[in-house]
Image (cartoon, rainbow, N blue to C red):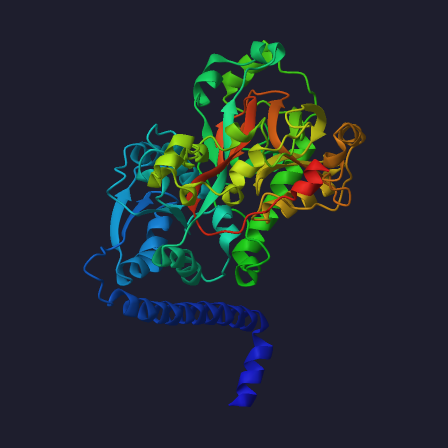
Length: 535
């Protein structure tokens, strides 16, 4: 029998290789499914014990409101939620209230009218953009600080394509185990105040205002938008998702599609499907770079815009971005900027007790006794920062970015990190940069192909002495920390920002940090060294 098998292999080598590869793939898939089901059953068994515990008479079930768009990503998010998250929520003894959305924008509407007494926690099941819309709807409410909304934590489940916020808390290759780790803080009722980015539209320069159409002014929101991770403006996003005059198919971004897998997930990264996607990405970006014209920073003429609108195709442009950045030095909070950074948290700080009067002490009134005096050493950290003054706080520095492949503004603890990726020198370098950033789940990805351009180095030398130390010199990206930044795009027609992986038409914006704005996961935040800032 073994002899016949060897003869058949020699006689049909191609069929043998195909059947062997198919058997390995099918066996690997079945084994993964079986192990995942065993893990899901073990987690549910552990949570069942918690759900069967008797609650004290004075306690109530924890009410959780889940925001879910069942139509997103061809109903894949709904399938992931029903399979990996919903059983864990129900079996653990939570009172789950489902809010099904027709589209992601409805998250703002529902969170804007949410009754503060109807829920104890909010869980967003979806992408980063759904979480950002929910947070934006909450922070836009006038009663956010005065009601129980201030204490309601907002959690997230990694069920979408872009899960950068959930990756900060932890990452697991098995989705059900990852969801379990994200649900643990909900069961433990643990949370922590978290900073957010406030994106505000600013007035344009006269040159940009002349070339901005009325439709673009209507599409960009006039109110503030809040983000949990950051903003990205780059060429690679344009090629993959549309916009920027670089996409081969669309003039403006379409619905989110699955991104390229990162190397952390080895079983998925080396699958035949991902190999095919990477080959397609190499072709798209190489062809886009070859067919793109020479970068021209000047805005298009009226004839070019009319010709592009008639053809319903994007106006082609060079593979680079041009912008002007106005940054302010990083400041942990002083007399100048404290009230703006803690505009929400300041209303929650109790007022200082009035000083005792001399006749109150003579009468021996309990309210004026020495034991009721406020302890000066027990003041909160916010109040201690107010007493300091940073002479460099609020000083603006202008940085001209003549050419860049990508500009990223992300939240880094109490500050804002600005990263500018240099442009590519050739098609090979451009494709390497694109693949390195498309396979990176986070915003920052060190690309070891180019160097910081001289104009940016000269601009960095004009920063204060404290900020020069924060510029990363070993990396190929120009990186700095600041308290706020204003981004003026070189051109806005057909350009799009990605705020928490959601597209917005490019306009001049001011990005600042709103501290302790949202109650969320008990995450560790980067603590700035005040001595380094004030020295």
